[in-house]
Image: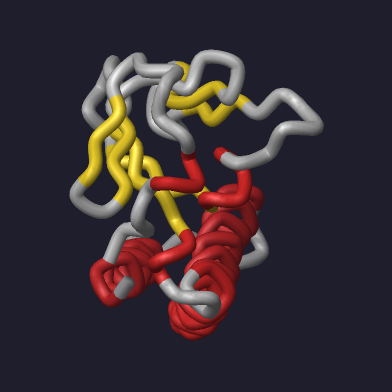
Length: 150
């Protein structure tokens, strides 16, 4: 920002050095351009200051949100979650064990990274781990028998 201020000041000095009469058409145009440039520098400085303040505020909000997410998602304890690995991208997905035990409705868990199906209670499928047990495309395992992940 200081560089722009210096350049505007330099142009102002050049205009004065030309000795163009201020009441002439050229003098009025030149002075008008310099005035606009100075106003733009001031406005950009104001926007820059506001942007820095907003960035600091956003960091505080992000930290607060992160704390809330930690409290919300892990309040009940990690033992109530099942870990699944996406077969497409390898992303690890956590979901509540209660969803896997749901019989009244169809439950499909998709990878948030690539959208690939990670678990479906119709299929009881894919690379799902809970504790030391691992299920891979096996409908015979009962979810109630699985130990929660620690």
